[in-house]
Image (cartoon, rainbow, N blue to C red; front, side):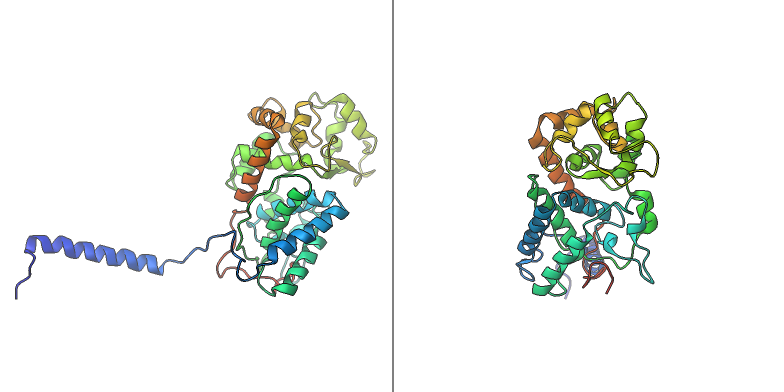
Length: 331
């Protein structure tokens, strides 16, 4: 029996069918990229977030500085190999720890808090919640604990089985960095200039070591308030090696409250670190600093959005990586 379709119409139909089948085959065999979701643990560990929140509140109530340390820990993790908890790994036969990188050594802290949280979560849901996700949630809960903004944390990250010591040395911002270097560094991680300034606002809490701001307060530069510099010199003498570990608050006004005083300080030339003051020094970011100094709500909103975006930097998902039993060692 002849075809119901004339030959002139059959060829396009068959061609479309082949194209459809080819596309379907390609898509069905393409690797599926798992997406992060705020509901990732709703069924597998429904008490995970409340357990983390309680532990972080306790840790911050014991030491207010810990809030800044945990936010910074998440930041330093995401900028090296992505948000994969690689920064938590200790040295071993196969691991060269990122903790030894110049911008981490004797600087990043809060590891014992994360280890404690992991232990509590493991007791209710063994092998389910990653250390990378714990870091991300801990950063959010730390912000809230000191009056900062909250945000919805996307979850489903897995933990790396490798470390990035050399990357940590190259990819982490330095207290000596100029504006162009900072903009370039954040851009390489998919974060724009406004997001860079917003994330820098985390320095509205926390403290810095004398060794990181000694040069700035003793060089008699024009971009530092004289009275501010004089006050900071009292516990940070000019001779290297003397008082290196003495601490000073990054925000002298409200060092334990997450607000927008950091930006007001910059306008008054009272940024503690060089990498802080370059954000307001006649450059392209001056207008953003001014805007944030006038509106705490705008800063808070932008900071929260930037933290969510930062948490999306190259996460391990699906079958990649692992769920570590201990945050400081691979399984």
